[in-house]
Image (cartoon, rainbow, N blue to C red; front, side, top):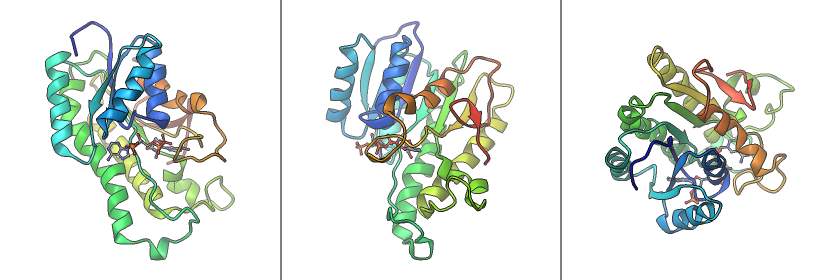
Length: 246
Ligand SMILES: NC(=O)c1ccc[n+]([C@@H]2O[C@H](COP(=O)([O-])OP(=O)(O)OC[C@H]3O[C@@H](n4cnc5c(N)ncnc54)[C@H](OP(=O)(O)O)[C@@H]3O)[C@@H](O)[C@H]2O)c1
């Protein structure tokens, strides 16, 4: 890594799916993209593909469940850039039985593993990187939530997600939304904005082939929130510019 005047973004889980697409779209805007991957070889392969398109993409070893990794990443960013402009907390897991509606039998193990990645890791990594984000002229934190994290819609008969009850995943994203609200409140009056993104139902390994959106469309919400202007919102929950009910 070397210092420069370009904006610097870190995207977790950027070796494939929405993370890779987000890195591609941010990179095309001239932003240096640090592509987190728990398997460095996969991260390097993904970064190499973006470099072919002229993007300043660099792979970083980052298992979001390994505190040693994010401490090392924070140190490397500090040394090479001295600042972090954008953090996209994208890495996530869906471990529920996809048949759904098994709340009463969801195991503690599934709940714990889901919350470890989708909630606790996001908080710990964000806390580790906040000192670097505070040095940015326009710090942006994007938490990849989901419309499945909307308690309001889950409680509303006939809503888009009413019959899509994957308890561990849904609860982890609702908790993540709470982090967005609380951190944005704390950071009011700073240059940092914190928002939750619902990318849409997107064709990735997680979203599956039956999903509605192509990957390019799916990356747009994260990119929009990662590049918000100074008068843009903070503490919100959005899909393609439209607010969602919490
Ligand atoms: N696709 C959708 O329809 C949809 C809808 C709403 C929200 N989302 C959210 O969008 C985000 C990205 O989803 P996706 O569809 O792109 O899923 P995906 O294709 O399954 O990719 C998930 C990414 O997260 C990484 N990851 C998982 N655990 C990790 C860990 N401990 N450390 C580092 N990386 C880890 C994966 O790495 P490996 O390759 O090593 O497993 C992969 O890069 C997730 O937070 C998801 O909940 C997706």
